[in-house]
Image 1 (cartoon, one colour):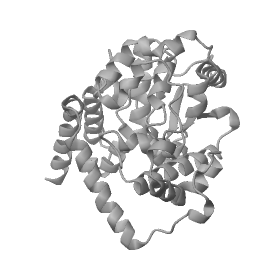
Image 2 (spheres, rainbow, N blue to C red):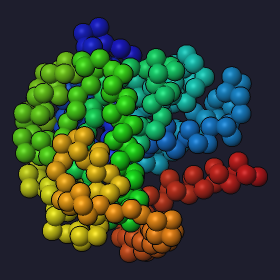
Image 3 (cartoon, rainbow, N blue to C red):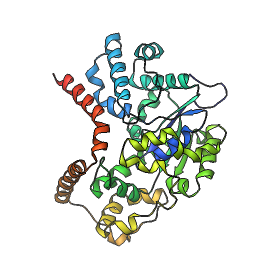
Length: 341
C-alpha cells in the first residue's frame, strides 16, 4: 500500500535501544496517518535463521517462513491490537521471495486494516541489515535516534536484556552509531532526520513538529499525550524496562552517567567510543591523557564479567518481565531445535 499524497509509506528508526525509541514510537502512533506497533524484531531474528528455510522460491518453504513470522508476532509481549496476520494474504501480497518482502507486506497489511497510509518500525537493530534495503530498493523515511552512549550504557546496566559490562556496551553503541551514520551518508537529506534524545526530551513539541514536517504529515498535539494511550498502557504492562512510557516526557533524564559511573567505567567507555561521542557532539568526561589501552587479558576478564552480569540480570528480573517474554522465547527455542533435528 502506498499513498498518493505522502512522500513516504514507511518509517524506519535506527540507533541503539534505550535511546527513547519507544517514547518516539508512541508519539508517532498518535498520528492518524501512522501505525507504529511495538516491534517483534523480525529482521534481526529471522535473517540469521533464513538458511534453514531452504529455497524460498518453493511455495512450501516461503509459506513456512511467513507462518513462523506471523506466529512470532502473535506472541509479542506487547500485542499488535486487531492485527491482520492472515498467512495467505501475506503470501499473496509478496512480489519477491525474501524476508524483507514479508516484513514490508505484513506491515502494509496492518495499514490497510487500520486505514493508515504509513507504518513505522522502531526495531533499531535493523541497522545490521541495511544492505538488504539497498538490494531490494526499499527506501523508507529514516529517523536516526541518537542518545549519549554513556546514558544508553547506564540504562542497559539496569534492565534484564542486553550487554552489561561497560566495555561491551561501548562497543555495541559505537558500532550501531557508525553503521547508521554510514547509511545516512547515502541518503538524500529529505529522506531522513537525526533526532537527539536530549533534544526530544527537552523540547518534545519542537522536535515532533520537525519530524512531522520532514515526513510530510501535519503535527497533532495528541503526540504529546502518548502516555494516556492504550498502546502506552500495554507497553508499560509488558515490562519494567518500559514503565516510563505511561509518564509525560522526562525532561531531566540525561547526564546521569556523570554521577553513577565510576571513573574507570568512564575511561573504558570513552577509550572505546570516544571518537563516536566526538562525532555526535557529546563532550567527553575524561581527559585524553587518561584514555586507556585494553589488553587481551583484560578482554577475557571483561567477557567473563559481562556473562556473569547478564546471568544475574535474568535471575533478578521480575516474574512479570520473564513471563511476558516466555512465549516468544519458547517458540524460538522450538524453532531452532527443529532446524537442528
